[in-house]
Length: 253
Image (cartoon, rainbow, N blue to C red; front, side, top):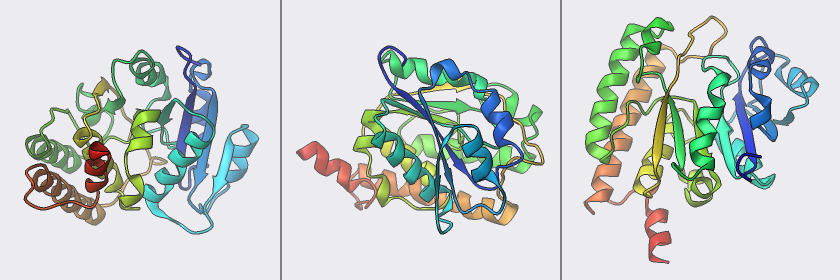
């Protein structure tokens, strides 16, 4: 418990057997009340390792994709009574040692959502982020900030924490099961008026870390642009968005 709030850490896993134990061992366990891992039909022994570490482990019978995995992660966290949910990739790309900084602002009511930003400091390039990904990140973030009326250093980090209220209000099932889920979720969070904070996060691009290839990165970038334009058009009542309309209905009610 942190300030009387239950903190649950969720890990969306895909072939994370080589890095899961290392990630788990570096987590400041005094801040976490429960651990959840969702295995997206891995092809290795991630499930066995997860269970041996005492983590509550759930297995998808079919590969649902990164977004589909997160949907299960958040649903399971809320089912077990989470007040704050931290998402940490089990591939050790993001350091678990920043968890106190990721949850404390939410526990104290300062922010509703926290992002571990690779861009605030110099961690992205020194940690091995490919140059084309760094340039694309900066371009897309500038574009998104203008269209969604926010001022974040990046929208593409996979290190995030949310209050229970955010997860309960957002219509996450409306979102994609693919990688674009992350951006759709942030657009919903911003549109709903929740407060977002950021903390500088060093990152490591290693052989065992998950990463999408160049073609998939291009597809993701196009999806990001579409998501941002969709949010912009919805904000000004030019064209309604299925991912944001449920938030309007909640406001009306």
